[in-house]
Image 1 (cartoon, rainbow, N blue to C red):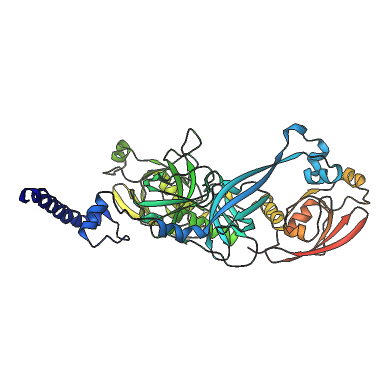
Image 2 (tube, one colour; image 1 turned 60 degrees about the vertical axis):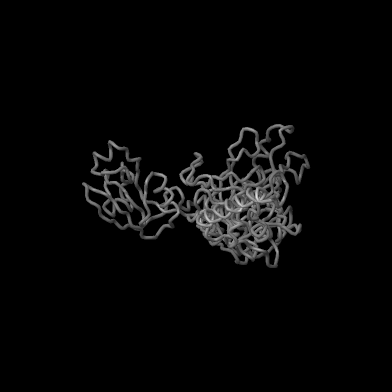
Length: 488
């Protein structure tokens, strides 16, 4: 019997030593936000692969806020051939109204999103809703709702949607993507291949990945399974906070190979704020060209180490020039955050709104100094008249084209005054007001509309919530219609 007890004593002793060792490293096994079991034997079981933490509490917290996004995009029917000159001028909706020829196909696609405001505002990818004429979302309880785009930013691939209708919705919390570390657990939630409310788990594989998508690339890489249909859904930490928006995968098969990418939520949050308040994104502009600082360049410009970026050129009249920045300066930090590559500076400047004063820590002739400058708006993102007019037509929910003498004769109009409505947004303010393709707008808010220029000048002054009155010519009848522009 004594011999029989020998192995048992050795086993108990081994477990005791192992438990003590694992207890000493409990902080390494469990992050600060996950409580480690108090029982040392339980720690051994965890270390041995038994009793691992479950993610059920995270999934239960976030899934109610995750939505499935169904979009309909109208595309040309290639079987009907090219547009006729008449159709090109009037637009397809007008053409179908009078001729009834089907010249379009409806393309349907799936994506995901996450509600981040109880009023029904959701975050998703811009590419999920790009060109969509209809958007339907399905919430976790299976209910279907219409949604509209508050704003979309193609450069960052972030879009904000508003669910149409009253009521309160479960909303997820936004976390801090800067606090993520490689190796942290994350969950991806969405609708891969249309399988709604799918949860996958993995870790943060890398940070700061660039995919060649543009100057604002700064992706979180994860091995949590991300597939087509996951785009726009949340990447979540163990506190149930959204830390990223799932966006892309690297795959030769179309399915997950364990390499997925998400937009950091700290980046998305800044874009979201602008989209929900203004419907568009304005980016700061410094007016400087920079290049990587190589070892040889670092020696030439008095930098003992390869840190920072080298200023190659400064634009005349730019904020950089007015602050005294010069070609040959080495930029070390932007608002006290280190700059190690040109992309760091591009993202930092682009995510700062125009009008903000920023600090640059630079190295010049071997000495550090700090420059302050007030950013202006990026020249390529200003409100040109064409862009402003397009925005105004979007607010009204219609598209127009100029009237011509020939068109006036075809429509049996006495004069060529006004603009022709060629398209009406389904569910938009104009449709709700009763406007139809083919209507001619003669007045806007009791002001005469003689030309397209007249219409655009009057339309650009409109804002959400305004009351709009239009005088229309429809066939041989004149009529007034009135409606209120939707609010954000």
